[in-house]
Image 1 (cartoon, rainbow, N blue to C red):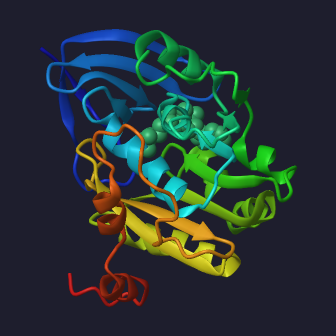
Image 2 (cartoon, rainbow, N blue to C red; image 1 turned 30 degrees about the vertical axis):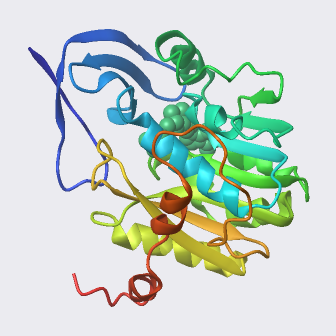
Length: 278
Ligand code: SAM
């Protein structure tokens, strides 16, 4: 049996997956794209040697990336998903009837096409009429927007290479400028077990720009470190309040998960002050 050895740039461990079949392998203008099949996880999308999604567990990540802030925000109508070429985040955003427009800003069109072909249940809504697909760098896209987006969601690859442009103070400034007065922002920020310095770095950068910054987490089986973090920020409203009723169809997220996902305040404070006892 062939094996796939993941090449995660930051992880102190290496995951190895048995490969039933290699379904696709090619190089786009931006990265190497591969789709393999594993007996337990089903089809897996791999970019530059790093697992992005698996059929088995993608919903944990996509639901948690999207629905927490979509419930903190009182009435999200205009949303931007930056990255997220597989379409999973867009699928979740469109579960909210109040959403009128979704900018889907993926630098690599090839990822969207591969996902259309191999992950129809993930990419199922990328061609919805409410979605405007923009194949450019998210940092460039956001620069031109002023006060018009309710929620901005970053679903990028790890914080290296061209994804780095989405984690700079400059980018966070543009995000703030692009948001409406009650606007909110969320981005992945790696694992609390393995990448704590990175988590704190993203939090500190957001704190330079936004008055409200917070952190919530979710268990993701296929991302190294597993205890995955999402860094969130808001121009005005607190993020821990659930302002909308939960009435969408999800497999993991619900009201209880919303509240439970935010890092307990004492732990959060210790994390930021670099005083966690482990
Ligand atoms: N859920 C996945 C994870 O955390 O591993 C991310 C999946 S999604 C496929 C990541 C996408 O972000 C990739 O398709 C990549 O091309 C895109 N991306 C990375 N940097 C970007 C940028 N600066 N602007 C727009 N898209 C970007």
